[in-house]
Image 1 (cartoon, helix red, strand yellow):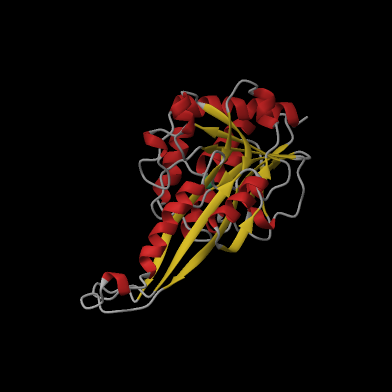
Image 2 (image 1 turned 135 degrees about the vertical axis):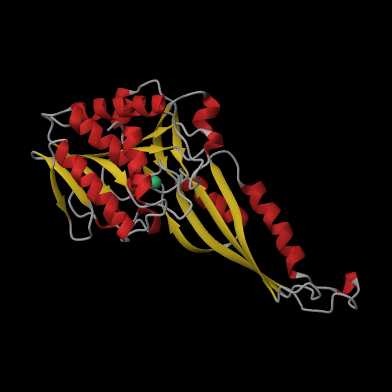
Length: 315
Ligand SMILES: [Zn+2]
């Protein structure tokens, strides 16, 4: 089976393979079979992460096999099947292929890793349009963005929408609308900021809005820029993660590939000494959607780079 056929086989189990579901179990079983065929010894840790190990492995490669309800066939699965392929091409190298549990909900598996590899290598689809825009098949990830999530509340006064004159209103949603534009304008080079959810009370057509809660998501791969963005926007942070710098395992084998940050979280955030390589996403970079696509040619280049990086490290 080639890599595209393996991605098809995993997708055929189920489009939605929720963490710790029967569908994720089945995908892990299939990957375990391919690991054995590649000459790897299969084991699982206490949280169900799957390892295919050869020799005294200090170098890991992999990703995750769970998926979101609207998933395509590349997110996560590509990194696992690519690592199995690379392991097969390096029959003498001590290494481990890993499939982490439940990345899309946490991540739950990689977050609980206790053993420390010398290096963890993850090949992943970009899930965005940057590489396609550059006309480049592969991009070295410099860092995974830090994220801040929280909200800002606007208080007004509920009034009758028909009888209250415009100049006598305290409309919380009008205030919130100006804030949403402000959030967009605060995001400058190297940062992104999004309002993806609002809650309007009482949320009735004929009532002036009394109270609006606006959810804010702000991200940057630069910790200082992220803090400045939070200050500029002005919102109550409920949850925050720091940016995580990626290692140079892929930069060493692809010195001329473009560098980019990852705006999305990945297992590599939680595993020590991680390096990540992105494969160009087609169809406008769409992801978490059945139209998610990377070409077989780009994937082949990614697997070549993963193999070269593992060959360099696993000695
Ligand atoms: Zn993923």
